[in-house]
Every structure is written in structure tokens, then in C-alpha cells.
Length: 325
Image (cartoon, rainbow, N blue to C red; front, side, top):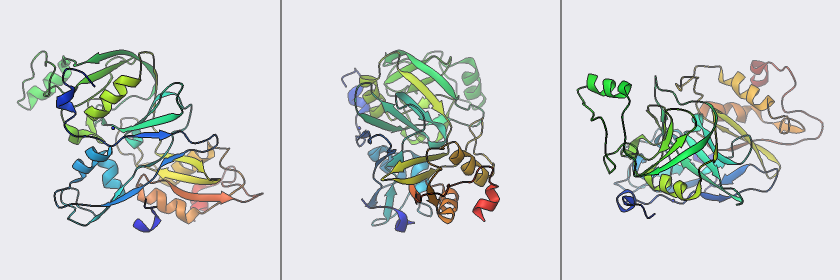
């Protein structure tokens, strides 16, 4: 596993409570035109008291991406001295680099502040089974510090069935599930917000909204104005260029309900690559590496192709099984 990895986070009334633990800064300079990869993978040695949840909070990573990058490592007791991979290298999502882009399959948000040549990226909690997060384009329509929460009747009924009686209104404060800040979206019923449960970040745990670490949502609140465009996608396979070579970042596909998908991964990754005509020409693709990256699904950008004049990466109409075998 380690052999293919380069070694190498305001003043609102509750801010002091939310900022008790610091999250590593997530700002990266935008790569030059024609380049798509930011950051570097890190490898650290765990201390005795470390858990994946604690490390995720410290480094701005979600729980699932920590699991994916460290197969076979005990998430709750890695053990002192254990090498831990921090997947802090990212291929930028496809499409315009503007506003907020959320990739459900990645459990991650990217924010491109207008007029600045940087990108911020944050781990997200997304909708769980039966409460899938939406796909589409919208905008930030409201910003609310220290929000109260009025649980919808459906959520109150769900909690009541488990013996947990929710009040009609939950006041602002450390017990509020919305955390210290919420962004209202043009999609009715959906929000971007903080959380009173840091262990749900980077997992499918919400009722469809997008949960952030509280430090992160406060940082975003300072930067993203009302009217910011929000684009929500579901791209498990991201391709990008860096140094003239093609990289692939693979995650577990999610279906339209937000559940892990049982689609043919080989077909899905070939179809994803075919959408990138700019990458699929004049490249020599290592299909053994592609197969390994797709099988691992570890979210780590890996080189899969290099320039070769006159040969396409994927022939038009190619049978995915034939390509892989």
C-alpha cells in the first residue's frame, strides 16, 4: 500500500466553543491551466491515543476516506508507531472551478473563492440510507450564524420511534445538530451546516444535508457570500492531468439513493474516462494500474497514463472487459 504513495483550518457568539480543536488548513493554490492535481499525500506515525476520528478532525479528513486509505489498520486503536496514510492529495472535480462543488462519492466539498487563485477543500457528511443527498445545481440563498433547529415532522417521528422525543425547536448552542452556522440552499429542505457530532463527518449519516466540521463551516462562512453557486455531483472516478501525465482517483460508487453501488466498476471507470476526450488521446494507459486503483478505491490520485503519440487511451466503443483483460 505505502509503496505507491508519495511521502511527503470567528468571532461568532459560540465560536470559542466550536474552535476547541483545530483542523489543518485546507487552502491550496490552484494549479496552472491544464493541471488538475493539488496537495500531497502524507504519511505519519500514530501515537498511542490516536484514532481515525481524531486524526480526521486534526487534518480535515473524513472518517470514510481515512478507512479507505488505510485498509487493515484498526480505526480505533491503530497502535503507537503505525504508519497512517493521510489522503491529502486531490484531483479537482470536473466542470467549472467556481463557487462550491460537492462530490457525493468523495464525501468532500471544494470551494473556489471568486477572484482568488486558490481552492479550499473540506470533508463532508452526506445523506444516509433512505435520506440520500440531491444531485444538481443551486445557490446559497441564506447564511445564518448560531441557528436554531426546527426538526421536520418526519425526523421527529423517526426519533420518537426510537424513544428519543425531540423538542419542537432546538436552541442554538453546542447541542444543536446544525452546529454554529448554516447555509440555506435553493434546494428546499437542504442545508450546508456544522454539527454537534464530529464523528459523522465523512460518512453517510445525515438526513440529506451536508455536514461540516465546525471549524470548517465557520471558515467557509467568512468567505462564501449569499448567491454563491453550488454544484452537487456524484463522480466516483476522477481523472486529471499533472506534469503531462494522467492520474486517476477512485472512490466507491454511490447509487441515486446515496447507497454504495453494485455497478460494474470496470464499465463505470471506462465510461468515465471516455467523457474526458482531452485526456483519452495520445496517452499510453497502464490498464493493470487502472484495475488496481479501481479495486483499491482508496481515494489516492495515482498515475495511470503517460504521453505516447498516435495511440488513444481507450478505443471508441471499447469493451471494458476486453480492455481490462
